Image (cartoon, rainbow, N blue to C red; front, top):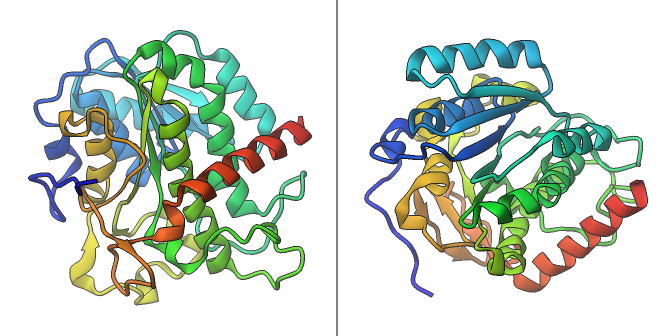
Length: 309
């Protein structure tokens, strides 16, 4: 399978990735759209004429962001709905309230390297937020995505996935000492695997899903990691929020991605598969795009949600 390349790259902004795209009459959802990459992704999608729903925990903050997006794009079809990915009742309420087709679902919300915490079901917090909540949302909205007839799902992963595969026998750190970075890595691997299996499983519905690494960007995501003072990434590799949202917007809107699914992108281009940690922000671990692992994770996620309901 040929690696997909585009004219875009590291410095491309979300506005540039969306330039010339017309999604008038289409509908999009962006999770975690009250700040950072989510807000910028929503802004770029709104600039295409799409009706955009900001799926956020704090709707008051979401409303302020929505007003700003409308002011900057002229699009008055920017809406806000409450969604807490760690609360299955909240996900179910969001899904039940949605009516009509859905063209784009951007699974953007997430947490990074947070202190040890568990949901009421006993699920590790990062796996629950970054993967299981989005899995419940996407599968719950499958009928809406299928109704569009040409829908796309975008899964925001991270190079952090190279820190850990899915540890099938101890996903929730019941036996291992909790490590915030291993937990983060496992959850980001899950995001990539979701895209692989969703594309395979939903191919007959013309739904495609792709995963991405947005780059190193300073947002609220780094609140547990020291932010700018952490020194984890060289200054020349730091992106602006506008640049960080570009790959998500490209995957959500570009004609170049028509019919393309189950792949992993960095800097607006498909990245290479690696068999050891790359040492850069590029590369996707082979285990993160493995079809068998993707199938296994889907079945496990389905069973976990079924047991919780």
